[in-house]
View 1 (spheres, rainbow, N blue to C red):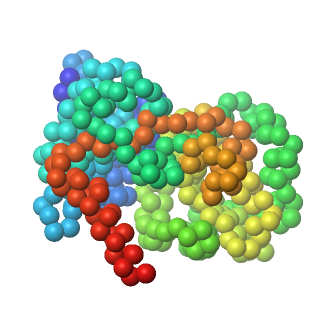
View 2 (view 1 turned 45 degrees about the vertical axis):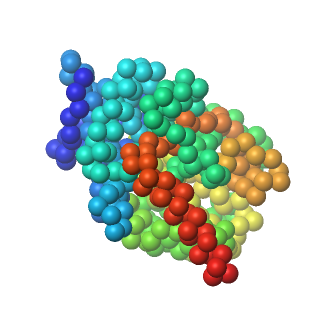
Amino acid sequence: MRLQMIDKNDAARFDAFIAAAPSGDILQTYSWGEIKSPDWDPVRAIVIADDGKIRAAMSVLFRQIPLLKRTIAYVPRGPVLDDTKDFHLWEFTLSALTELAQKHRAIVLKMDPAVPDNAELAAFLSRHGFRLTGQEHDFGGMQPRYTFRLSLKGTLEEIFARFNKKMRYKINYGPKRGLVFRQNEETSIADFFSVLRQTGARNDFMVRSQAYFQKMYEILRQDDRILLLTGYIEDKPVISSITFALGNKAWAVYGGQANKYRNMYTYHALNWERIKWAHGKGAEWFDLYGVPGHVDEDHPLYGLYHFKKSFGGDYVAFIGEWDKPLSPTLYWLWDKGLPRYRALLRKLKS
């Protein structure tokens, strides 16, 4: 096997492998690297077998550390292997990734492949210098470790019939009372952002810039991998979302709800529209994208967990986020020292 670097001329071949692989994810596509640039510098490569077949692919994002000539190497939802049970392939791929990260002066190689949790792979990663991280976060790291995935097998009528009576009622509630959906060029990132910003303020989470979402939409729209969907009541945006599709997969990535009309089950209707789009794209499952593991009713995020669970999907736990420190001292300062320093500053200011 050998490692081959990839440029824009090979983007279609690279993305075709990502789309077909069982653990392939849109965050590993060539175009996702373009979205993250220039804040992150994307580097792509493939692992080729002796017979010329692609066995693995990786899009590595490098971010410059301020004041240092060093970087952070991050492989979002990767690397992607054609056989995640082939440990010889894992060994070659991780060795190549490590060399690539060292070449770009990374202090750490971080990855979170979209591979279901299993003890054998976790032990293998530990033996090769990786450590599980991100467990202090509700969602398990930079990407959600836990999710619900809804099977899209069968017709839309069959999928809808699999919902319980209460879910079907909630899906139909808004559209019967004036909720109208528009998608892609019929709506706008501006309307999406206005709704998302209200959600961020209400739930106290940071929202990326409108320009970031506009760039994302324009790049992914070129290959028809994105659905921008907004629900309107009396011509005012009240619910909006962004959904991704790649190969036989779809992800409900971003969404927001305006402060008004939240009692009309608008999010239930929105998700059904997303599911219909994903089904039409040939997706075999619809990822509801992120829950805080299995939680009980006294957990602050139980409402989110219960809502996504109510669609009847399968609970999925991934292998998690793994770090391989390449400069132990600098890694400790970045991983432990800097957060402690920031926490101290916040405490002093308060």
